[in-house]
Length: 153
Image 1 (cartoon, one colour):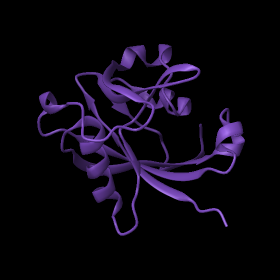
Image 2 (cartoon, rainbow, N blue to C red):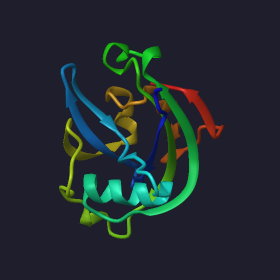
Image 3 (tube, rainbow, N blue to C red):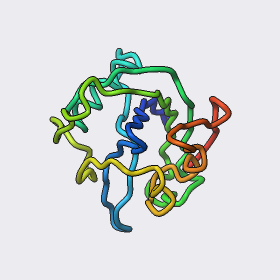
């Protein structure tokens, strides 16, 4: 039996810029929001705090839930490698107690090569995953209009 993985991510906007994790795979550079998989016995908030320490090297203050997204790998561009992967991801609005504290973190994801602040006006030109959330960034703000976004790549 296959399991559904749960995850939490941080959406952090400061001065018109989105904090992202810079990743590299065979197809090149792409960006994701900080965060990752929830461990057994952790709340989503605990998992998100741990993942942010690992990936961006700093504490985050977790705010409201912005949206929930599913990712069913067999339905998307990475279906050859993700055919058995299914994740439910909760994305929270977060802030940083000290934005200057961002560092290398203690444990990067395998494909992580850095941390980057992307100006919101440049999002259209960047490969941010999931691509489907790009239109929800407007005037230094994020509004999806719905909490449940469904199966997005």
